[in-house]
Length: 605
Image 1 (cartoon, helix red, strand yellow):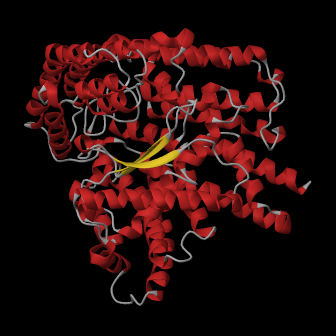
Image 2 (cartoon, rainbow, N blue to C red):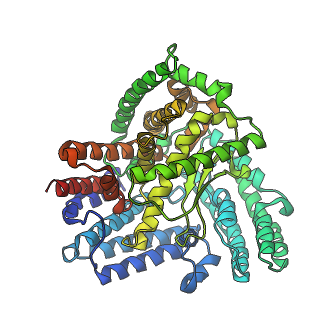
Image 3 (cartoon, rainbow, N blue to C red):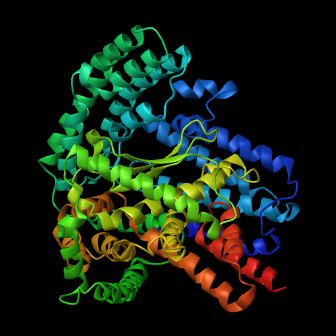
C-alpha cells in the first residue's frame, strides 16, 4: 500500500463533478431510479447493521429494524476485517452502476455515496487506529469507554420494557467492546502506534472517573432513573448493576491497567509523523476530512495567509474599542482576563452561561428569515458537557436531532473551566454549533425529503464545519452583533482560531512541532487561555486533519458567494444562494464548487 494509491482512491470520486451541470437548483428531484434507491437502502442497512449505534442516532431502529436497538458495533479484529470487506464490496457495486442512465440528481447521489465509500476504504486500509481518522483506538477522544456512556444515557431511548431490555443488552455488549478495543490497543502498540504521554494522562483520568461503584455509575443510574420515570419495574436497575459489576467494570479495569502500563513507555512526541506509516496516514486523513487535494505544506501556507488577513480586521475592531497597545494576541489576552467578561467558575456561574447561550440561540432564530427561506422544524437547546467527560471532550460540539423529532438538536459547551469562555466567545459558538450553523444545516438535511437516507447519514467535515464557520459570518451580517461589539471581536477571534488550526495541525503532524510549541502558538497569536489552547492541541493530536476542515470549507462557501455576486450583480439573492448550497445536502468541496458554478450559470441564463 502506497500513499499515492490511497490518496488517489480518496480523490477519484471528485473527478466527475461536471455531471452536476443539469442538477435542479432547488434540488426538488424528479422521480429517480427505483433500482438506485433500492441499492442505497441496501447499502445503508448493511452499514447500520455494522454500526447499530448510528441506527439509534438516526432514530430508525424501529419496526423491522428494532433488533438494532439492542446491538453494538463489532470492535474485534474479525469485525474490523468484515467492515473492510463490506466497504470494498460496496465500492464495486456502486462502480458497476451505469451513471449514464440516471438523472442529474441521482448522479449526484451516486457520486457522493461512492466518494464516501472510497474515502472510508482509504482509511480502513491502515491496520491501526479506531477505524476512522483517529490513529488511536483508545485516547481521550476515541474509544468506546469515552463515547458509550453518553450514547447510552442521551441517545438510547427508554420508553418501554423492550427499550430497557435493549439497554441491558447493550450494556453487556459494552463489556465485549471494551475487551476487543483493549486487544486492539495492544496490537497497535506492537506496530509502534501509541498516543503521546500527555494524551494517555487524560485518558487515564477519564477512565478512572468512569470506573466508580455501580451505585455511582451513569450506566446504572441512567436506566434506574429513566425506567422509574416510565413506571417500569425496578429490576432493570438491579440487573444493570449486576452487569456493570460482573462484566463492564472488570473490562474497564483491564483496559485501564493496560493504558497505565503503556503510559510508562510513552513519549512526548505529539505528531503521527513518528509512526512507520504516519505520513501516509496523515495525508489520507487530511484528504478525508478536508475533501481537498491539498498537501500539508499547502494547508499550512493557507492557514498563515488567512490568519494575517483576520488579524488585520481584529486590529481595526480592537482599536474602535480603544485597545491600541500591544499585538493583537496581547490585546485579546487582556479581554480574556477582563472580569467583566468572565462568569464565576461555579455551578451557578455555569448555569448562567448556559442560560445566556440559550437566549442567544432564541434571538438568532428570529433573525434567520433575513438570510434563509427555510429553517429546520426541530427544537434546539444548549447544554453543558457532562462533568464526567469534560476532561477529554471538545470545547463545544453539536448533536443533531432525531429524524422523527423525538430528540432535539443539542449544542454542548464544555464548562470544565469558566475562564475558557469569556462572554464575548459564547454567542459565536452558539451560532456555529446551533443556528444558523450545524443545527440549521443538519436539520435541513435531515428534513429534506429529496435526499435518500444514506445521504442523510453521511457527513463531510469540510462541508459541515465549513458551513458552520460561514454561518458565524452570516450571523454578523444579519445584525447579531449590532449592539454587541465585543461579541463581534469574539466572532473574529474564532475565525482566527480556525485559520491557526490549519497552521498548528500541519505543524504537529507534518512539520514535527512539539506539544508545547503548538499550544503556545495559540496563546501568542490570539491570546487564547492556556487551558483552552492545550485542549485544542490535544484534540488535533488524536484527530489529525480534522481541524483543517473548518477554514478550508469556510473559504469554499465564501469564494462561491463572491463569485456569484461578481457574475450576477443585482440579480444575486442571498437566500437563493443559501438554498442552492444547502439543498444538495452534505457534499465534498469539489462537488460543492461544481454545483455552485452550475447554479451561477443557471441564474445568468
